[in-house]
Image 1 (spheres, rainbow, N blue to C red):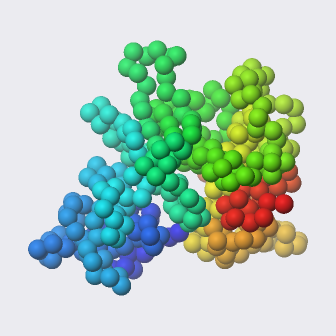
Image 2 (cartoon, one colour):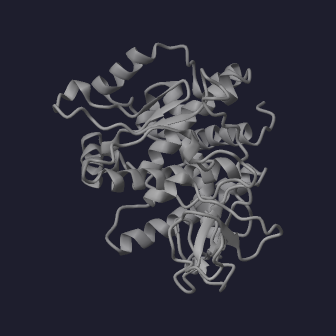
Image 3 (cartoon, rainbow, N blue to C red):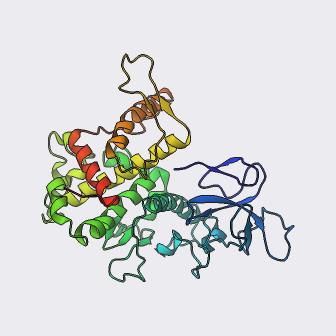
Length: 368
């Protein structure tokens, strides 16, 4: 994730900010520019306070065009700070227009749960936009377009009717209970996972969508099978075997997570999610000017200055060689605070080759 700056006062601002903490100007994310815009109130009263609601028109402090900008309709609920594309007729921003089912906002706590879901989903869309990936809406592709559902479990408490997070031909469902931190941590422990985050769910499930788009529909099935295995294996049987027996012995050499061992589809989606973890975290390191140079190491094998664009880099080696020293450093920082490792995974040569396949897919590079 990039760092942003308030164009009015040059104060640093962040992706989720709605106001500048220094000059109090309204902030809005412009998806077409991948940038945060500082805004002054427009309309009939230019002197109207900048801290007003996200309704009406707003004028960018710095812009080539002086046309007014408008916020996504979901800004009304304080769950979105994105601006509508200039000249567009949709009431929702590039990220929110893919919503189909949102939580019941009459229930206590659901607005905050939705807010957490949207923060994670908007970070996902930041990455998809940075990578310039195709993402057709359901209107553009009625049978395979991307759509998001955030349903709650039935009120009767029937465990067999609980909502399952997953993907089905472009429809991504994230169970609302995943936005409850205590509930999500309970599930993480019960399932023996290293981490369980909303952003991780979004990145994983969209990986299934892009398997459809970039592998199946693009004629890359055989190339993908050569790396991830035969996806024609019965998925239901594979899932049942995984939950009964767990991952196979020695799985850490070939799979980025235990769940990735379930089926080639899950291996692809888990690897896809980790690729997005890696490039986005590296971009954050670049934005902060991070450098790793451990003085105790006699050679420069762990010395890295992060000064490249991970999203735009065509050189996968540059990405993966930067990732190891960065994770060693941040894991050590976490341990110093008594926190678990930020990235408790090991990238073996086999896993790196799978990540490289994802890299070639997203950059439209030859797969052979």
